[in-house]
Length: 144
Length: 271
Image (cartoon, rainbow over all chains, first blue to last red):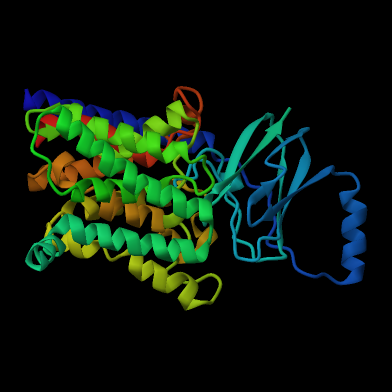
């Protein structure tokens, strides 16, 4: 009986490995993301505004109570900008905590108070994220 | 009375309960919230009262509820700080129900805190939060040792009980090694948080407090190692894009809690 159970465990481990490898191939999406943004010279800000005018942009603010708005609905190709107004370091990470595997491009750098992070969402779907330093702060991006 | 108190303070469960309370205090200082304090206190009270009630129903002589204090502390640390106050009460009651009635022989099958938390996620739509064991950083991102590193060291304090005194280090180490290796392989951006991903406080807490619980984890050394690796693999499997939202009944199911409970079930007969 114990040998049967051990064989079952090994089968689950092998099966789990195949699922993980398959998931790794599916998740090899090149991230489109930026480093935390700091104050920029005026000329580069003007150029950025001109290029950004062709990309729709939605902002999400992170305060001490969480992300707001908590759920946003956008069209493919829209840039989401997270602005940290929480007074402390925070992160934006993909669901699920703490493995962060569901959508790896959402595993953005940590950002300090006052900084921002952004990501362009190209594909339709529902993308859940959270602050890894306080996983009770969650948000969802719905691309449709 | 004083000798009884000293005896109680020397027991592993009481010491673990004290360390867990210290962890909560650091979390509370980091994120002061009256609701969070109430959630923690209600978790403690509800687990103790539920345990005493269910023990009475089983016609067992009541005993000092040190184990339920540990369970209540874990529930208080992992339940969201802003949930409605009935939530920790229900989670605690379910946890104690599983401890007292989901048993085989003289052992309960599932880690009580994990069972209660999963039930809370499924029934009350309150996902496991990990809020109190996620901000601690070995390498402080804010540059403030007092705010992050010292709480991290306090987070490690249960090691003295679970891994050193109770010798459950094989489970924790096998899980941590497997988890870090799999994370490096699968996570396309592992350096996003520098070296802090190796010392992820949630993973650390899970591996030194929840995973090696003696009643629900194997005693055999080889099986302990297998148990740790099993839980690590399953936690990533249920997190993979293929499974996370398609097959799980609730799309916020916690991978660590789920994999722990599955490990409890699978390894129950292999103790």
